[in-house]
Amino acid sequence: MELFHGNIIYSKNREKLSEWKDSYLAVEGGVVEGIYPCLPEKYASLPVTDFGEDLIIPAFSDLHVHAPQYPQRGIEMDLLLHDWLHQYTFPLERRYEDPEFAHAAYDAFLDDMVEHGTMHAVIFGTIHREATGYLIERMERMGLHGLVGKVNMDMDSPDYLCETTEDSLRETELFLEQYQGNHTAKPILTPRFAPTCTWPLLKGLGELGRKYQVGVQTHLVESLWEAAQAKKLYPECGCDTGIYEQAGLLGNGPAVGAHYIFAEEEDTRIMKKYGVYAVQCPDSTNNILAGIMRTGALADEGVRLGLGSDIAGASNLGIYSQIARSVQLSKYKVFYEPEGNRIVSLAQAFYMGTKEGGALFGNVGSLEPGYSFDALVIGGIADHFHKLSPVQLLERFCYLGETKHIRARYLAGKKLGTG
Ligand code: GUN
Ligand code: FE
Image (cartoon, rainbow, N blue to C red):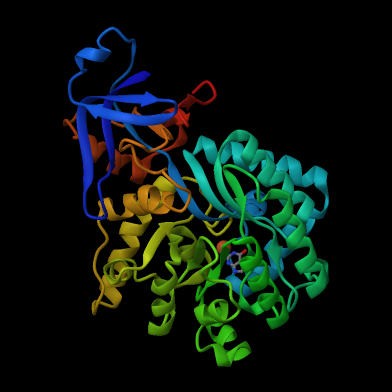
């Protein structure tokens, strides 16, 4: 049994944060045992790790991130999606055919992700099985929760990133076979998006999904160009999400659609039917997409939601920044399209980045009893002008936090690094 003291905050539900001021948290075998406003008699003789007035919060979940684009963060942002991909991103992804480059970049990516307090992530690799295998293996060794995909693309891509349908399916099946037994970092099917995937590929992936009972991640109605292209290529599927349903890719495991900006009613019907997560990537929306998810309305309609950095769409790995941006973007949405939209609260955005997103991986993303103690200690953001409540300190961390404010990190009850 290990005991911690501090100001403890986690999401009770979409509307409410639970705030435990000046309280004790007990961890047994890496799992939260309980939270106590006063130290119980039975634990009185045990040592307590005291974080004083610092916050103890759950570690974050990033539901959409491109690990290979890590070297591109913060540069080359002057184009919209299609041209951005072709001019900058695809040439970078090509470099992951070189294992040496890939290993170094993935090591740096994972270390920095943890540095930013993210311990659970749904990740795009590249088309390269070896490099993506390295990424998933390292995550598994680190004990990080992940859903990691070897990307599939067999049309309308540069020659150097365009697989044959047969190669794409064969390599994917090898990837699934090799990593299906993993404990924390598991494989997920990853057709890049409709514009780069043929029907035989999508159908073949659907069969693999059924055979291995594995889910899918992709980009869904992320730009007007992509949404129109999906309908032009696959008119009989009705909408972008319908493509994945009809290919048999939904209902086999966790399913995640990144961006989900230009959705129609039919998309949302399918999302709800299969419990597909819609992932808002606020900074990426600003940088390359020009559209805003109906986050408040989708939550009210019962769509599962999460937050993503979408590196290199965003420049910053911190999901805490995306929490603040999600609130900010909801105001633009309400301003430009008041009908049916509402402002997203800090509580809802934090829920998306912790408990709701974490549910994809199991009992992570909260500090309630039974959850893995994957947690962050946040401090150094108070000032002496006025006394802020723990929830206000959390809000400030989301708006101006930096990695230096994460004073300790715990994964399954174990303290990471020296910080
Ligand atoms: N759509 C297809 N590929 C990508 C990508 O790499 N990033 C983003 N943001 N959207 C995509
Ligand atoms: Fe993306």
